[in-house]
Amino acid sequence: MIERLSVLYELQLIDDQLDELEELRGDLPSAVNELTSQIDTLQQQVEDKEAEKKKSLSKRKENDNEVDRLKTNLKKFKSQLYQVRNNKEYDALTKEIDHSEEQINKLDAESVALEDLIQKLKNEINELEPQIDTLQKDLKEKETELKQIIKANEREEAKLLDKREKVAVKVKKPDYNTYMRIRKALNGKAVVTINRSACSGCHNVVPPQRQIEIRQSKRIFSCESCGRILVSTEIADDVKKKLGL
Ligand SMILES: [Zn+2]
Image (cartoon, rainbow, N blue to C red; front, side, top):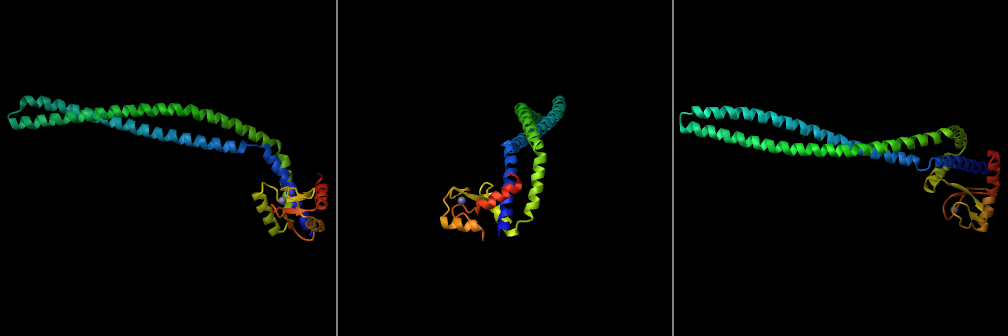
């Protein structure tokens, strides 16, 4: 049982050191994620606007061609007016002329609106691009900083991970699962000692009788307040000594 408790505490001490390395990274990892997603969002907006701009440009081009065609027809109709032989032909031709002129006006108005839209999209894209540049610069700086921190502790981290692996295989599977569950729920600390008659995880007093039982290390005891696994100071000291802490 002492061995079972010892390996659990050893695992905790190694994880404590890994957590410390992680803490050196501060909020850099989350800042990098946040910036990346902000950049993605803005880039998507630029892409959407570019696509809309392209569509508007080609629609305007289409309108221009159609207006050219209608104007050619109009010229033809107008010249035909001099050659009409009766009222019926005259009416038919003026109808065509009116219709063509209406179409031309409609398309011209549409082109003006499209031109406005294109200009608006251009402005919006022009505003977004420097924002993206600034964020990318910021991201690059943060990534570099993070990489430096990771690189500076690379060897230490690798050593700790190696140690952790060796200790983890010695921990019974159900103990390991309990350990990881508490660790996740309680900010990394799953196995703690008793300090001045209190659980060093939550600082609530451990009843004297329980303290004696914990010192005997006959089974695994959990803190009644926070649920963390409690080990005796004797076990803790031995493990610390073994790890050279
Ligand atoms: Zn506690």
